[in-house]
Length: 328
Image 1 (cartoon, rainbow, N blue to C red):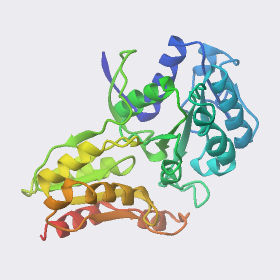
Image 2 (image 1 turned 90 degrees about the vertical axis):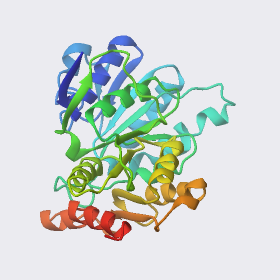
Image 3 (image 1 turned 180 degrees about the vertical axis):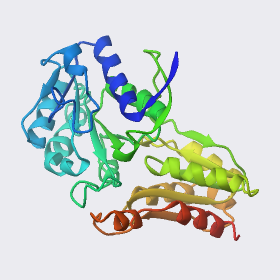
């Protein structure tokens, strides 16, 4: 059965299905139980699964993540909710030095099946300490997998895959997407394999590669340009680690042009990694224009709503960037 639902509800459904399927799966984090999560993602779960499997924790991201790593290596499959992605800074030792290294340090004999869900990005007026897009940090850590879904369908299918994976996974949920609606499969076995991207819209003139919050924005611009005779192909990698390099390279070979879009700060951001994948592959010989990166400004996210809007790529900036690459 396929049903329309929100991004937030799709994540809730994925967790519930996996907890029904496997009694070793449990959810832990600040206010995930009685309150239902800071953004309401786990509403109703404590009533079904009880306090043992939907565990409210103290306000300590380091302890939460460390406890999850310990639970995972001893056979459980914890899902951790970090209220804001910014707070992963408090959990870096547990995640980066412990969870990400255990399989390697134990010669592959240990498994660390933990999923770290974190609400990231701007757009909600949460200001500089609660609005960062930090996915590139975790892509730099061998041993971690990183997912940034942009649709309810992808959120459900990828979260289920993350929970079943035997490695630590950072699962980034962009806060403004929680209310976005889309068709979602209710099949308990519906999963989207990690490392498999998707062409969200086919085109022949230019490739736009994007993920997370910028995906709906890019798709809207692409549809508008289609009515003007410009054919835009939209590629969503969905998982950043592992990255589906083949789908990116094949698309750029087809169109000969590439525009990369995300909301994270441009300097040191993940778009640079995608650009190097293109440049170091056969796609380089097919480029008819330089690669364009459209990313957030290198500034803290402002609290003022208009300034907050100004620091991430707008629809108009995306449209202008595409036209510039096409010499229009």
